[in-house]
Image (cartoon, rainbow, N blue to C red; front, top):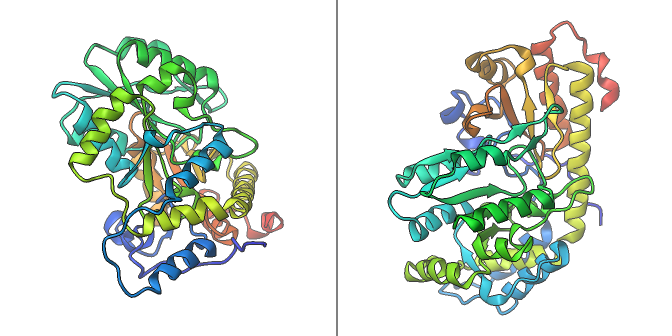
Amino acid sequence: MKYDFDKIIERRGTGAIKTDVLKERYGRDDLTALWVADMDFETPEFITDALKKRLEHSLFGYTAEPEEYWPTVMKWIEDHHQWKVEREWITYIPGIVKGIGMVINAMLEKDDKVIIQPPVYHPFRLIPQGNRHEVVYNPLHENEDGSYSMDFDNLEAVCDDRCRLLILSNPHNPAGIVWPRETLERLASFCHSRGIIVISDEIHCDMALYGNKHIPFASISPEAAACSITFGAPSKTFNIAGIVSSYAIVPSEALRERFFGWLHANEMNAAPMFSPIATIAAFRDGEEWRQQMLRYVEGNIDWLCTFCTENMPQIKPLKPQASFLVWLDCRALGLGHDDLVDLFVNKARLALNDGETFNPGGQGFMRLNVAVPRSVLREAMERLMKQISPSIERDTFDSQA
């Protein structure tokens, strides 16, 4: 079956954060929304059909998890990432960002510190700070080609005996990095030797692009398994973020006893009715849809990179190795923060994520969500180009459609 990713779905008026809070977030609501990290592709029918089937029953009382729930998740992980997860290692959690907060509350003492690696997803900073923990920055090293690598010399320098948690974005958001095995091995060795727990946020793990291969952090080594808590979900890959379907995987019995015990004591580990239904359908029936979606996203990224090179070279997209999020280097425009935001929002009428929200290293960048119909992406980039290079006529890029 061929799926239609060119179909435009009107989301305004549905409560979608991406479209329905534009006025609140950006000061105007006439923007093309390319910010929130969900896709504008229609949620596949094999998921909606499974949900509709359950909705046909007229009673929605308390429910138990279906027997096939966790075996389906575990099989998907083993088939796609060659990581054999034991049943006792895995449990439901009500969201990955919430899960970070739960780990902090369950595992850290009052004065413990949290390490993050900016530029990185901003809740990695906000959640620890909101729970009154100091955040320690271990900035990524920007390479000459615009890519990033971990800075272990800096990590050694900034880490003290109060650092007890490191939050790893794997694959990395916003830079789309699929971390090499050697990097993960070195990080695991460092953290394990110092008693640092690693939360590995692997929400984008099933969206590796261009032949790249995601490696689960906990699968790297016995040291990684002993010090890590992995978070995952089908929500990004199958566009069901509104159906909270996250899970935690903890191979270490010692960590599991503390974290799973906290979840159980606070009744945070029971999946609501529709989460298992959507998850089972996604992981059982979704491989062909996933493959077609990834090829379409790759096509959007390739189109974007060519368009920027030929029409607005001042903006340099970092080609992601995973996910539908593209980190745009806008520093060559020579604009300050407020002027850069004004260019995108008030002149081009585009809602992207401001790079500065991703903590140090995000200045002069914007994050673009390309999981949209190509016609939407093209129209958005045309508007931006006309604001950057007003003299360029439309016919110079018509052939790129």
